[in-house]
Image (cartoon, rainbow, N blue to C red):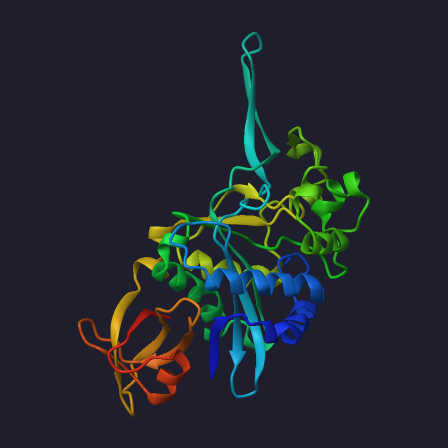
Length: 338
């Protein structure tokens, strides 16, 4: 059985392997033992915290194959983007110029460095084993974070964002980076992203151009990257789009990948999930696939299961599911359709 749970210090070796296999651009999963150790410690402190308000906490989850005793995925929630340093994006909007004498008005798209998304809750670090791509467990890895937000809503903002990895080729080259960022850093795209995973992104963002970049002045290959999703990032995009997330006028400042945005109350797994009481039962007449989690903080657990969820009735769970979730008769769990 695959179970999503908070990260633990003993997960470090497995996380390092996931980091080696992760997509370039997933900067929240650096292939560096010390940085990962710090990330784990910060997450453990966040889960231990008794705060009832949005702050600087980050919540790192891992997907564990309990039979094989290994990790097959990870994902994260940052309670407040920009809390520990500005959260930079590029805002893609039209600048309009006009001439009364010539009776001409013309709009030109331009990219401007901004911090508009500071204060939003941020989803990041989604990575799953290649064998599980496009499986129900990808849904579990991404959407269980949303169930966690539903249960512990006071810890998070009223809007959620995520940056989807933008396009780069098989040689890890980004046409957008080569046309813009490389002129200011003289670094390959993969190296710039690696540095972002090891250090605060602020020091790189502060060297980016402070004035608008007119999109038509960029090479066509770079323009084509704006809002384009890397093929390996498409699943993460699709899952959250089904949840009600939408693209907006913000893109990643390194690879121009899209930013997704949703009001917290409008997210499907938050608005449509239900708290139900557990009934321990030896066998279940399953009628569909569901995501189900307990309502704990540090002991948070979530699984995918075939269940018979009937409104107004307790939710029947087998002994093995109860054990995986750490619940028993009469406890409360949250459930939503897959």
